[in-house]
Length: 513
Image 1 (cartoon, rainbow, N blue to C red):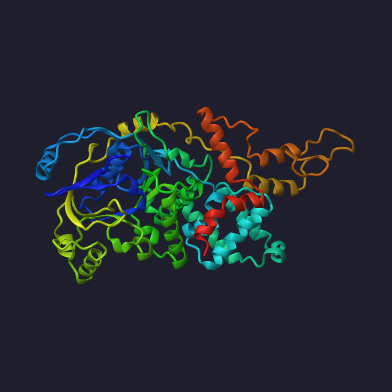
Image 2: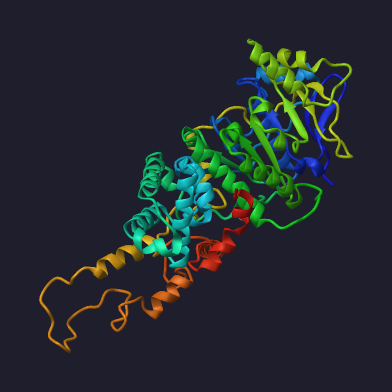
């Protein structure tokens, strides 16, 4: 079993996370500029050192310093002397950079079908009526074998359903043109914010987040979120989708000696803002159950009150940095935050929260029996990696040498709803040009159709069924990764109703009202 991970120290003793209890979740809270980022960096590097992969969102760019060894600056020497610990062995962590926009890391994508109507409705900020219409659109696409992979597929499907609403009324019920329009406008807004780059293939393989390097260190996956944070709903929905994917993908493992992955959810308040009660209950259910799959979830936010009580009660490992109490409302928040800790008779927790220096925190980790320890005041130990961001040149070098370099960079655009709907429209148009005489072979049939039936050929049906695996993509990838990525992507977006419902079954059960 790995040794305890020392995170903080006071004059009496070291405060350490127990690796076997890291999957009991936790939170890191505190006002801006009080040291949350460095605490996150220290915990991530400690986990990487024992072979645990980490995923985190970097909302300010500072966490990229994990990819470079630190050094004993004057400020760090002063802190080391003050808390009485030796300098760490300065070293970098193995890092993989990701970016939804593909600018500061490898692209991250998901298909529209895999995200599903429930999460997509939250991203588009739809009301209940509009969400119901979106679910019907997905249902009609499933029933007709139309794959929804990217935004142009969804736009084509919305237009098709809107234009043919009268034809669908008997089987599916009324489809409001106003709701179709609202969904289309929301989709345009997401596309203008760059969200269309998130939808498509190749889709992210969750297994690529759970890698170790040749030295056995866990890979730290850093999502560049400074630009993504400008679209709060896209940011929070994306991270919630990743959490749901982990829940669906991983098998039960019970209580391992160390977690399979630790997931840090920065700016966590964005997940819970305006979230309906049923969604909060499902999030609480995921947080509670994902522990048995070896995943630890840590929420990072300014105030623990940003996290609903039903979720906060599942977070056993706590680090509280300073909060400022300038107003009566702030004072109430401080008092409420203090009451979430196990009391220490030798410490006035509420007063200490307002007195903490930068890099100092109130710490309460779970003990060997899984009980929250009494809260203690301590300083976070300095990380062995660089504090602060690396340069663009250094980032580019890390991206080029990544284990997934070249896997996700080039998009794949298979035949899906857009191509099939446009093909049907083209086929329904009257043919232009001179009429061929009977029996003439000079007329060309539409590509991919049978001359006798006018429908898709057997070859095209097989190609659709197997997700385009029989056609070349022209993508240069690692041998194993091509097979895994394409088969997984095809399986997630298979056109049959049964296949679709299986793929989205777990996610729907988690988030369905």
